[in-house]
Each structure stands twice: as structure tokens, then as C-alpha cells.
Image (cartoon, rainbow, N blue to C red):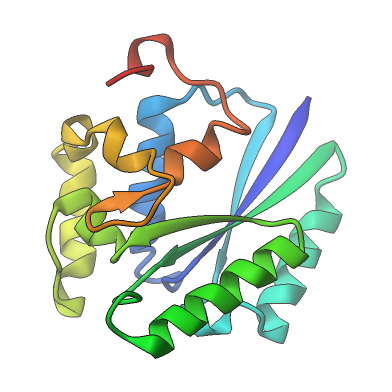
Length: 176
């Protein structure tokens, strides 16, 4: 059955850094048959998760995909949710928004670079580091345990747990 996955990412279209990590994860761990279409909505910042522009783009992409179902997946950083009450409140609000709209939420604790590179990256270096991540095939060094978490903790994500609902794992990547 055909399916479209709309990934709502915090980055902008020009930088497109988050998508590199997410798509490399998909390519490394999952079969990607032709009937699966991956679309992106660039939020520019997670605070725009429910902006008119983002909602409009999700609706537009959903309407144009007429071959099967569409799944919307928000991909956000948790930031310093355990230390900063504003970050925690924003995370809880986005989580509730996703639940209310039957969307999935992929989180990266504390940010996507920390999960995939093991460290914070300066904003000015994010594009370069994401390109190096792809070029050097750093995804092959990432451990599935860190990407399959159900509880938020530093250097972890639930990305594989969410993607497992919709995609088939490659046989040789089941427990790597």
C-alpha cells in the first residue's frame, strides 16, 4: 500500500540539516520501496509547529497524494526541557498538538546533532557537520539503542520506534 510520510522539520529549506540525519537513518535501517513517498515541511523553528503556513503546507501535500494514506511526523529537538520550564512547556504543547491531530512525534534529546554526532554544534557549523555526517557515513557508527528510546535522555531519540510503525527494517540492521 502506498504511503506518504510528511516530515515536519525545524530547519529551513536552504540549510536542510535535520533532513540529512533523518533520511540517512531511513536509508541505513529501512527498506524504502517506491510506494513510500517522503515529503518535508520546513518549519524554520519548532515554535512554528502550528503556524498557518505549516498547516497549509501539510494540507496541500496531503491533498496532492491520492494513492494511499498520509502520515504526518513532527521531528523536534527537546532542547533543555529538564532545566528550562519554557522548553518543557513548549515540548508538552507540541506533544499534545500531535496527539490531538493524530500526528507522530520524533524527538531528539537535546538536539539532533547531539543524538547523531554526540555533541552540540554551533549554528554556523551545522550545515558543514551534516554534510560530513552523510559523506563519512557516520550513521553506520550510530547505535540503534540510542535511536529507539521511549524515555527522553541525553544523546537519545525515538526515531526508530516511530519509523518502525510505517517502514520495514532491513534484515541486517535489525539489532545493530
